[in-house]
Length: 175
Image 1: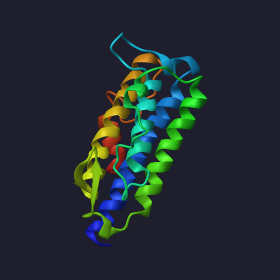
Image 2: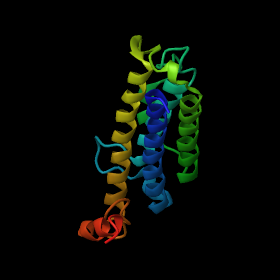
Image 3: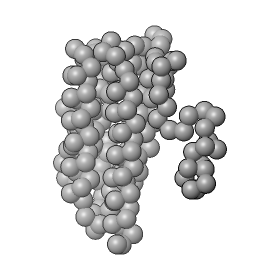
Image 4: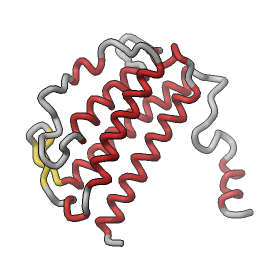
């Protein structure tokens, strides 16, 4: 496998990892909790999902052939309103990831050095992927943090729980 193929495979795997963290967080939340906002200048989980969705649809639709900031995207509206419920939010979440994975899985190693535009700024495909590999995990981290805050006392850790590192390492190293 060439380094280009390894990079694409790794990027897809990383995106899947972060999607799974969001999925596991949503699985712990009650219907009404997706709209919880900790303060007036904060976003709810639902609004973060709405923003990620808008970004994914814009960036990954016609990825190689059109600017990643589509003329029909209204970023400011992504931070307004809400969904009718958790199921509607999850539908939008899945739709965004489907567009991302369809575009990524269609890429060929020779595409990595092609130029794409984001807001009329040129990026190599590699740079554009890296840009989103920084952006989406940032927001997934917000989703997880809000989930932990909302479900305090009932939260099930998505990684190694506090005080369990040694136990986890012993298991991983076969001790």
